Image (cartoon, rainbow over all chains, first blue to last red; front, side):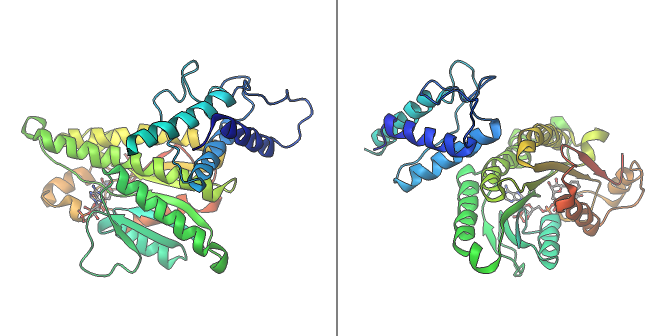
Length: 101
Length: 241
Ligand SMILES: NC(=O)c1ccc[n+]([C@@H]2O[C@H](COP(=O)([O-])OP(=O)(O)OC[C@H]3O[C@@H](n4cnc5c(N)ncnc54)[C@H](OP(=O)(O)O)[C@@H]3O)[C@@H](O)[C@H]2O)c1
């Protein structure tokens, strides 16, 4: 099963790879925003990150469904921050397993 | 070789587009409700665009196929999606059965949404920063607001607005999305209409002749072209309104 920590590390690695070395960017943390004015990714990069996460989960035999009615909601979206996305991913795996039982 | 996915490729305009695209050097993958009697000359998956799981499985199979043979033969992965699957119902509204209203909206609008959502994901993966193309179908029945076509025209008006929004979402990825909106063309979809009814619509076009499937291909070919990267969010009326 994928843990939130593992997912968070992977997300940060992907963002680093996507952005490259940018000197004037604040350091990436769990609280780094993925949506809105201060987002650390452009919308293009965010979609690419979600596709990478889908592939990463598939490699681990898990599935990651990123359709969500709240996806673009400023205060409810699972994509708000690195940490909320990582937690959403870990939780989705747990819920998926419950369904399988 | 660029891959084009064509829905409604079993008959009519979809089949013509798929065959012409193949002749012009594209790789083609068709998706349609039923298998045509004669071999269409390109791989065709049988499925219903209203069935989201079937659409997702179709694009997943293209992804798998692309991954296994891309390097070996110069194949470039998915470049374009042409959503030609569609149905029509010509009837006065009070005489239209509710089930028909639902079917027309499901196939013409929801089906396009399913294919664009699943197809766009693959376009984003395959095209990366290179881009891609989405071509959807409307009809001049929408801008002409034809009596007897309220449900069909509403479904197509939906496709037009949907595509304009999608074009904005996909623009940062260099993927264009446009709509081809023809007047009447002699395919199965016109069955049930008299020549007189068809002529009456053609007379309302700017160009007062019935278009041919080749006229549609001419426009689709143009939109699929790499050089058409500045054209997006447009609705092009074939025949003119
Ligand atoms: N021809 C015209 O006069 C005209 C004018 C304006 C706009 N258009 C639009 O152009 C597009 C193509 O029309 P056409 O003239 O080629 O019609 P057509 O000759 O009737 O062909 C439509 C194709 O779509 C397939 N299809 C229908 N429902 C489907 C579903 N639920 N899932 C998957 N495939 C499905 C059909 O499969 P089956 O063979 O199994 O039915 C057929 O292969 C449509 O969107 C239509 O609204 C056509």
